[in-house]
Image 1 (cartoon, one colour):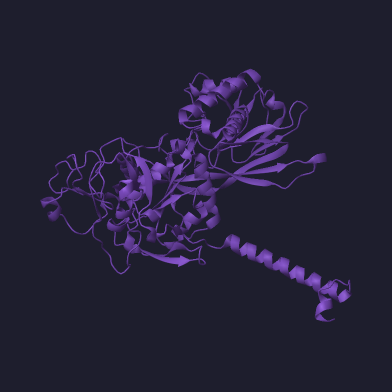
Image 2 (cartoon, rainbow, N blue to C red; image 1 turned 30 degrees about the vertical axis):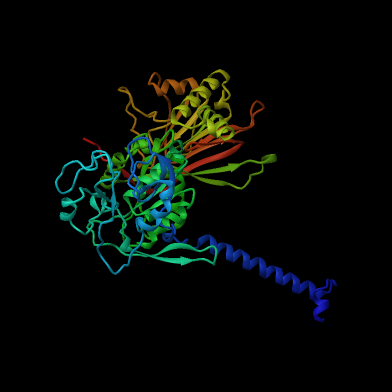
Amino acid sequence: MDQVSFFEWLEQPRQIVLFSSFFMILCFAITKISKLRKHRHHDFRVRDPRKGHHWVHSDFIIKPTFCNICETTIVRGVFCDTCWVCVHDECEEDGNKRLACKVMSLSTERRTMKHHWVKGNLALCSACAVCTNPCGVEPKLCDYRCVWCQTTVHEGQCFGQFLDHCTFGENSKMVLPPFSITLKTVGWKGRRRHVIKEVKAPPFKDWEPTLVIANPKSGSNQGVKLLRAFRLLLNPAQVIDLSEIPPETALEFCRLLPTTQCRVLVCGGDGTVGWVLDALDKVELPKRPLIGIHPMGTGNDLARVLGWGVKYVGDEHEIDELLQDFENATRTPFDRWTVNIKNTGLFGKNLPAKNLSMNSYVSLGCDAQVVLNFHKHREHQPSLFTSRIINKLMYFIYGSKDVLEAQCKNLHERVELELDGKKIKLPHLEGIVILNINSWCGGCQIWNNNQFEVDKESSFNDGYLEIAGLYSALHIAKLQVKLAEPIKLGRAKVVKITVHKTKEAKKVPMQLDGEPWEQGSCVITVTHKGQVLMLKKKDDS
């Protein structure tokens, strides 16, 4: 067969065998390459250090601000979101030439570095590290601040007396010094990016570097402001924007330090925390990091039980306190659960099973219906949901609507519940909640014992789940203000729920850690997945 006739389809036996073999080998190669790409380690990507300042346009009306180039008052201009240098729009080019930005990487041969001073625009209540008198109080560009240790000193005599080498201040145990990082460039021309090649531990006692992972969309889009504040206090390479870098790539930072205990501060709602914990299962690190939470969602139930509060911080001083609390936090094991959903197709045929991870709770019925209605409205009009107060108001509206409509009535006739293999007889109810933590629906402690009960208290690391029932959406409201008691159905290590179709409703609303959907007939099994080490805030007492 000559070359021309080979590529011409002649339906010859030899040609059929060769083409079939070629496509089989090609499919096999593509499958292998896909698996290798799926399990390969991603490089830890950082900002391009050659671009210098990262300017952000802003109006400076909260406090008097002065240009770091011409030293006159700024009303409208730009500031660097890494070192917080402020300049007029017309001074931006001079700012790039004359003012150095906060460096991300230096030569790894050195073990110390000098202060990086920025003049003026100090935070309120700043004090001189030499004479302890207030700094930055004059109505002009005056005095200095180090962008690494945050030390402030008066210009002149105090500045000359201060130590030349930077100690990285109170955050030295968690900061990643520039002399510990080596960068490299990867990728083809036009798509080059900078990644961390190597990290060497600095000569700091009890050093546990912190990786900050933040969702900029959380907290009414206040995550962007939080990212800027952390870039000022830490190395910019330690601060990860989830809209730019996925958590699987961010967690590769811990692989660069295989023998060092790293910490991860997740800034976001319960959904963001679950996203990071799922990524942690995928990357298979040699030494797992400790996970802490900074709440920025609406419910923040997981943050509540770990002591981190219910709201995000606002100013620079509160973030300093947050980092100190994060450093002093205690380690605690935390249960995670697998939710296996086996859907039933036409004529009772079983469809492929779906496995999900649960951290806080999973529920069916009236509470999931409220969350589902809220979720649909937010997807349709995202601009309406701009604050936590508005979000809670919308939850109240949809909860009131379900009180009148009772869309999940007679749920007990549509589901079967088994706890550790024992079938439970259900009373009349409209909702079932399976709890891993004793905080649900924005802080409601549904498993609190009253003085007449002797049941075991809820715990997130005892390997047990608590199962409660709900009469209606009105029952949820009464539980919130402690005017009613939940229907305690029991505690178990394995929970099985069978959902049946009925003529009235073919699907039942369901939610897992605040993510809702409509679920058809299926068998839901909740089993223990394992434990992860979380950080719990120490009590102030």
